[in-house]
Image (tube, rainbow, N blue to C red; front, side, top):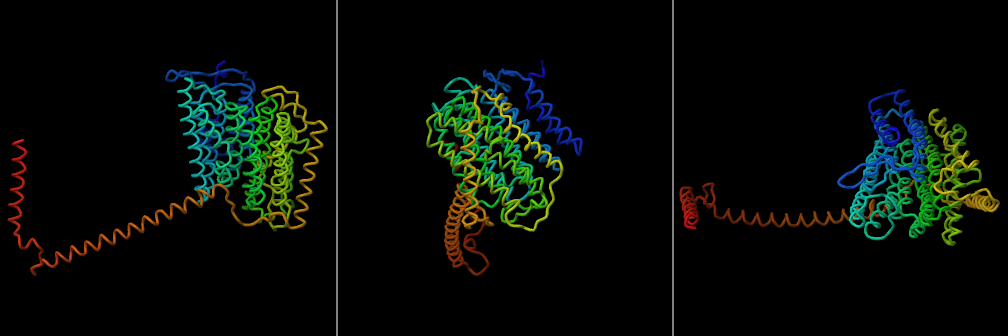
Length: 566
């Protein structure tokens, strides 16, 4: 039974060591074997606490399994396997090591049964994932990676402070329901919110993910925000505030994604949009809503990963990723085009694709809970995601105008990874019962009733017609060679300009003070020059050095005398 007590993240940490010490096909084979073996082992793990220890009179639980953690553990293993296959052609040891450690950190976080263990993996997520951004080795990637790391570490620091307050308030470090009662609950909530890309704290995602390597972005899209979704589902289910935060997350990224030129940045905004659906489900907190949030997280890892992989393939083969530079690639990249369309149909929640069977659960839960306005926001967001991810991504990358680029389909390992993800998107859409059987609650939900299918089909049809009409009227936002800033304008433009002006003022005052000091010094020199006697010396010429030595001796003797009589 010793294998039962072996946490699944251990094999991935060993995998990082393997990736650092092996090369070539051996490294690739071992890296593929790790998520397969670990996943098979995890499939046999029953619910319960499988590892615990004492630390400073507190009970640490590094390995706790229940339906919620197991669900995220399964999808993280699938995501790791697909991403490893996708990156087999990469010979960069830094990326391979970071990928294994990053995946292990995410798996460790979802099986953490206490806040201290969670904090350790929370910070490991930051320090391992940033190398996937820096591995692109450009100045933009380095700067974006630094901003990303600052925000991720800040989230960890706030989590640690919140955990310390939580221990003081409850005397426990167990990671279960926390709620917004007390300072600790709010601090931990903020920490989770930063990593979940809440509004105004989301720009680390849209800033850093598009600057990562083509393979690194696939991993980034799978783990960081989904760990935060898991943490919210564990600590804050039924928190009403999350309903409104999530609704805002589903809507505001649409406006930026529609005008964005960098297609990977479009997907980054789309990622926030999809996480918003999960946050709404967690906030509603019913069995149906939580099932919808968890299942949508499961599906999003796959179909968003597929879309990032298809855009990564385009970037890898063409060296370009802006919609204004692409188009016409369906002629020479037909396989990538078809696989991208599968991902686009899934994220758009077409019937018979994976997004439909999970997104509809959250929307149904919103209606059942009486959140009519939230349901309308989710409906608008569903139409919007079809525009910017379901249509815009494949249209501007593979169709639209002919860019003249004649790139071939990517290496076979990248195609196989995309093919596996596409099969899962279709398989889950056709047979959702397999996914539903893994969910925390048994609700008996059936996505394929006439109402759901008809409503979603109508929504998609009218959205497509709107896209076509806007294009025919030349009213759809064109793909321009530009970078759009949202909240990150504050720290990428406003704050640097303010700091620059402050320091400019400081240097100006410093210069004036220096000039004034030099003026006074010149006056002193002029005064001393007037005392010059013409023999090459100054005032000291009127006072022989012997006299100066005498007076120093007298003063020293007086000082010693006074000290003696005291």
